[in-house]
Amino acid sequence: MTLPWAALLLAGSGWGTEVKLSVPSTSAVLGEPVTVQAAAALEPGAALALDLQASATETFAITGARELESPAGSAERRFELQLIPLDLGPRAFPILWTLAAGGSTRTLSSTLRLEVREPPGAEKAQDIKDIKPPRAARPRLWPFLLMLLLAGAAWYWGTWRKKRPAAAGAAAGPPPDPRPAEVIAESELERLAASRLWEEGRRKEFYGELTDILRRYLERRWAFPATRETTAEIARRLRGRDLDRRLLALFKELFERADLVKFSKTATDDRWKEADLAAARRLVHDTTPKPAELAAGGPS
Image (cartoon, rainbow, N blue to C red; front, side, top):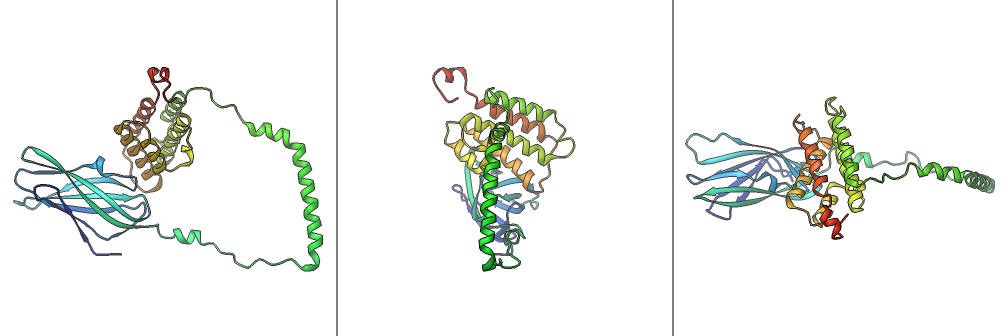
């Protein structure tokens, strides 16, 4: 459904404050930014601020927020947000605000509802049809073809049995790394930091390798298939463990930013390299069992 600047109402849970959200359309495209404008009439002395960290979820990310200039003498505060949907279908995006008035603060929330569609052309790429229907073999040839098939299968079986020992040895590959999971991850992060992927402008490759290092670490640490799971699936697993909320928020912020760089045209900031490497090191450090936990038989 598409509406010109459909207005969505946020009713605050205190002081009678209302924040109005408006978007150009209630339909959005996966991975593409949506501009959201917010406006609120405040009482004298009141202040309103976006709670960016609390607002982001697994289904969307807020990549930009700025306060717009209000008319002279007006008590209205106006903001402009850039939101990127990360999941398909009808979605509800909660946006949280902090309202300060009379020496007290209170959280206000609203729900922005959008219908998120696949990018143009995604359906056509999956709609592959045969150019011509398959042709059946002539009835007179099928016994001969069957004999050839059986002969080929017998030859393949004999060849495979002869090569099986050598192939098994080749497929075994190098032995698994015996070092602890955190030592391997720290070594891989140091190697990534020393690489020139970032300086050469290969930011998508940088974030791909950064998240792969953390996925392999989580797989070694807790023995779940992190290298084959989505960011949302990994986040659900981590929430099921006794981890600090700030650590969960750090993981979510890092992986969402990596997904945005890898899958959309989000511009990168040169400060992100060191900040995100430091965040990855902290994730490894803070999830590494301490000596007291190991002595008590805690998670390895």
